Image (cartoon, rainbow, N blue to C red; front, top):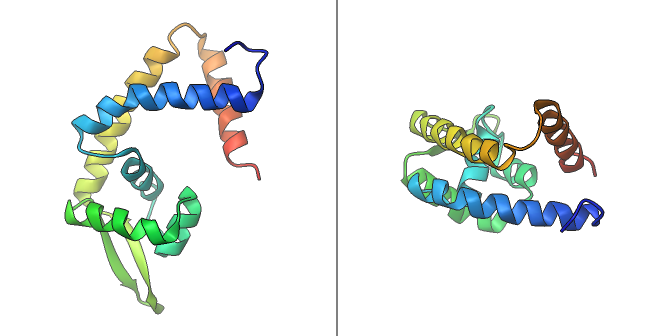
Length: 138
């Protein structure tokens, strides 16, 4: 791959390379990539419902239940009835979930820094900014 390739191909290649580099970090912490995605989505605060969480992470809502069951059994998330809508379940990180997420995030940042080591700081900032823009634009 080179910088003249289509953006989709470049992002896909970069995503595969990063996922492969991060896999051992996640395994050391007992998490799958999707479990880490859930913890990351909940780190800023609780999701008002499982449906909202599924939409936020772009994950199939029916498959999310099993993922949350596993995280809840591990003591990393809690699901509680929404006091305003008993049909909905509020999902939040537990203290252990927040601790585990912070540890994994720090280790992943180290991996990322290694991958980006040859780039100047401003280029790294622009890369993150550009990727965030792409990820959040429909």
